[in-house]
Image (cartoon, rainbow, N blue to C red):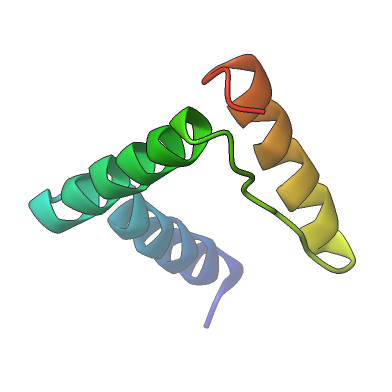
Length: 71
């Protein structure tokens, strides 16, 4: 496989993951509702990872705090 074919295939696969569909949207709504329910009950959501995943978890946690006002 050439470099061009590899990159093209990679980007096409990535775009497929980002393409919205009804099931994905419903799952995201359920997650949002669960996070709001947890917030309203003064409970905690723990987000963690190991290595690079820890950085992603930290970044996601920041987004929840800043953008969704969920601490």
